[in-house]
Image (cartoon, rainbow, N blue to C red; front, side):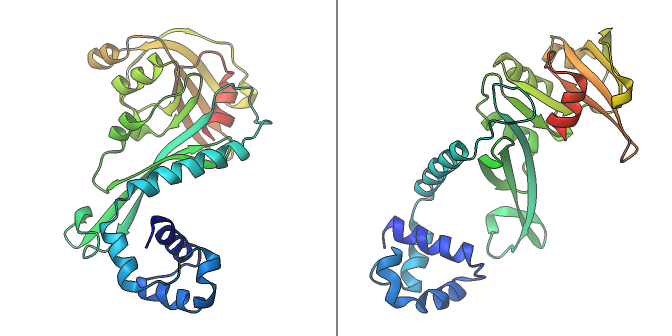
Length: 257
């Protein structure tokens, strides 16, 4: 069984929502006469497919997936994005997926349960994932920032779980931008405030520096802190960014929402 045959079989199983290898083989056997034309090869057996899944290195499929992702992003690019930003806009987050401990023995999460964590860099302009990494569910989200290759002029929208000022400063030095929510215990020294439009929910737009000893050592340059009131949810949000050019409402409405 070639890599291509194997991949087509597994894609077929994914697209048709097969629940097991046995279920997949029963569905494939219903199309035996079409194997050659579908690209599955002359024959498929549960044993050969299972052996290929167990023995073949996954990296060949990973590399091919990124080729397809890049082509898809190019074809889905939105030139009419709401903001005039030269770079891309990415949202980075993770999802925890509970799994069977007997099957995913390497992903022990709790005593009786396994779990994996799916870390995804989502391209907002194309609605296509640009990067995906799977780890044990116990992995810390913030450490995944070390795997990203930052693009000059692009925006990275991050949750509070990713607030690590040493890592954010690395992002800043690579001429990229981040937007995140400030932690409640963050100490911040205001230097000056920008003019705001209160009718748009902006409470303040401040430029300043981190105040505590370790954070200002990790991130010694200026930051921008924006307080925003969302009338719909009756909630207050405090955003933190290294971008000094976009309007405060653009940061709150478009970039983060």
